[in-house]
Length: 369
Image (tube, rainbow, N blue to C red; front, side):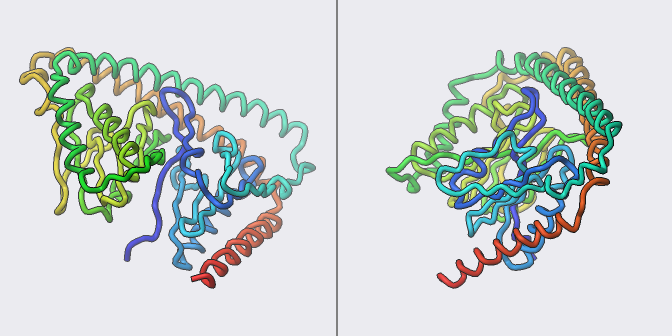
């Protein structure tokens, strides 16, 4: 049985700090329910319960996962209803929703502040400072890793035939888009397929591409033009009116790692570490940018230098990951104070209120068919 859900991230722990894509991900919805309140007041649990209930009713649900705890949800979208539910604390600011309605649901109402003593408040404040510091150090470590990665790329950029790389892009644009163009330009939808988490890199590539007819696996080295190729394809798709989902790199959001063309039933993605996959079914193919665009022998010519860079890069990424694990542990300590002071019967009431509103919307859509 095919799961009637799509899984994404729309925030990331990156080399450029916390990065949010919720504005694009939640664009154009009829209604967005924004759940407010501190961690531990049941928001993620309610979002998960609503997602499960909606899936049981046969609704397609887009699930947006937490990069701190990927098994938890930051938000969901009911695709057919064009309704979103989001934890307002973690989305980087409430998305503008010019096309529809914003409804605030205050989960802070379930918090009994009398159960948080002055001592608890001081501890929470102290832990909040430590949490901010752990995140800041993690982002600094990721940025240092990115600078090391830039050193790695230099060896390949200097060996690259840019004319050949440009031709690869033009050939793909012609092959993919011919016969599908429209006179009306589109705007791509921006998302993450993966994230840096306290347990390392995590991605949803396989589930996001499972139902597609064609998957193009881009192979290559750092600096071999993979992201540049994807940017050219994305720009051309928007200009030619072709629907495109644009997936940013969870490490460096200025780079792209994947494009999905829903109506073409095609994906093209950077299939190198830490999201390295290989063709395993009909419709899969490899596009090797190293072979197509690089001077032969580049790997061998700089093997020693590149090995040293890879070692430094790996060590810095491990450091950043351990700092995210520290942040998760501190966040859990803060969360425990709020959990202990939350009246979950009130949370259950808020969940039932949301479920009732969603059921009404589902019923009205079904009646209109």
